[in-house]
Length: 392
Ligand SMILES: *[C@@H]1O[C@H](CO)[C@@H](O)[C@H](O)[C@H]1NC(C)=O
Ligand SMILES: *[C@@H]1O[C@H](CO)[C@@H](O)[C@H](O)[C@H]1NC(C)=O
Ligand SMILES: *[C@@H]1O[C@H](CO)[C@@H](O)[C@H](O)[C@H]1NC(C)=O
Image: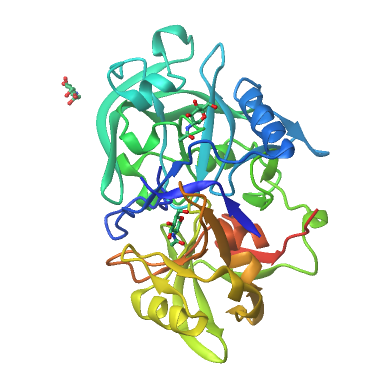
């Protein structure tokens, strides 16, 4: 069961997709005042807070495993550094955009999202190289504004020399209280604003990875310091069962691929549909027709904002949703796709993870999907692979 101790009202449950076709959702989440904390949730929150001040955390045999922190199952982030000496940032890894940005020392302190987070100070870094080109990165209706700079970027102590990134001088309010300072885009250069070479491409070009790919393992156990792993240059077969099913990337922009079919209750929701895998999207965004069909099949009622709710009592009787990708069936059960949301009056409601954004005709498979299925983003072979993730 996915639980959210949040009210559906105002921090984004939105998907970070850099372009204008996906409108950022207006339904947002704010922390619930005085939510009932359990001993274990308090412990997890404290560790998470402590983790904000941690240096890079590495596990695994190769040292290429970056530990991801899980924030309420809605955001996963890790630690990276920029500059010499290293300045550390919590960063959200986003496979649906292609730029790296962090707040700049030159972002005015009146900008709350900048004020709250770590900031890059080029004058403090001996490896800084000026660029100065102004760019704007759009995520749906929101924009982050700043200018380009070049420096050494590291994640897991893997150095990326001469990486160009954006120092943000304006960060929108949706980043206020976010547990991460900025975004590390992992998509293809064709969608990088300013045609900047993405960090992953430079990592590969500079020979830092054993294999030209990354893989994600996201735990679904709520807030946790050890909330998942991003493996640079490797695949860990102990983190999934069976074998990986690969399908080719259809358009190298997002990590876009074809889903052969999606069905539930023997009703086909789509055939030969285009989908993208988006690690910075908590839910699953579907085209409007599929949204209507899914809600009909699971008896969910739209709240007017592109989110649909079902009675929690009915949860166990809801149908599975099956994705046929490359000939393999990937199944989401109700406990995977139903999220419990607690509001200010302590009413618990059950939200479907299948949401809808005006104007979007792709399937955006976010953390609800990637958490269930270990995902390999294979740049070298321009393909994406999935296999059932192990649960702990
Ligand atoms: C929340 O908790 C604080 C401190 O325990 C208390 O002062 C406040 O009145 C509570 N607010 C609500 C809405 O219950
Ligand atoms: C970038 O924007 C700033 C602030 O608007 C402006 O002062 C500066 O001249 C711009 N730089 C370039 C290279 O256009
Ligand atoms: C939520 O709780 C309040 C106060 O307990 C109650 O009046 C209201 O009807 C509940 N709303 C729903 C949708 O159950």
